[in-house]
Image 1: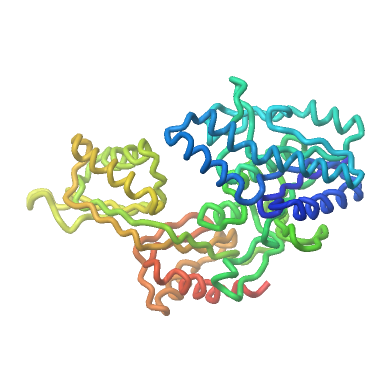
Image 2: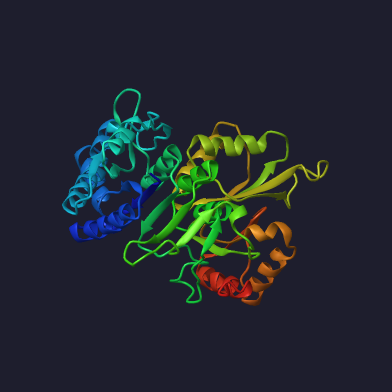
Length: 419
């Protein structure tokens, strides 16, 4: 039988009524002739509640016990979904991660997949079961302990099962009806995309779009798993939502497909660093060791020199990172300075910036995208602090107060409201 993977997020299974609604969607696919693997998240809010209980019980908790507690939310949803499907006369069975088993690394709280053997679930399908309801977000380490995959891990679970079982498609049901050209809450002109390429979706997800978890898109692109994002709360058919697929399935692409933003960014500048081989490695190696996620990086000749005999011997280094990682970054840099690993005159931190990006595979074959972007921002008197580019993306750091204006201006400049 053809196989379909369907994933339901926390808002889609938030209560018994929504679980019943999701079960009806699963039954419809069974009636169309599919065997179905359903991946479920915990009910909305349940994971946060469980995390709170762990932290209240043991502030310096054992990560193995943290996973044992937090993974239980998905177990409850999986059992309830299987029961609801049985009440609808759909042969279904629930599966916890260890029962499949979903083999992962031992990095508790941030585990990664090692393998997903098919034998146990395939055997149940052969016995006449039509649906396997699998608890997302969790797995089993080689020590036999429950692991979790980190926030958004159920998306990744769904894509991994689609790859392992050769599914025809992986449908991600959420509280939005697809992927939009930008956040509809910011621009009323935002348009739902019928299709988007893996690379574009990966960039949008990494740049702040919340529709899909970044790791799930990476996995889908690697194994060419066709993804579809669609709403749990609307009647849908095979043409609903947004299809995320290989570039070869998209006949004609706009130069820019979407505008993404990240509100909580910070800009950090080290002034007057010695300009010699190994300095950048010392700075960013220190930040990596501290777990700081560095994004945009700019290096330029400093206005100052060590002395008149050595002009150009110093440089300034600027980088961005999430604003909640600023204390960690600052401490790492200051500790490196105290240890003599790096030297600088001044450390300036700006925590009032945002990142705005335009993304599109059409940039590969069209010139002038940067000029058009910068002209649109200039027309709104928005100053650019940092610029970063890739083959299909241009990102800028700007003052946070101009973020929404910048998103709207760029959406208009590239006429993204037009199909």
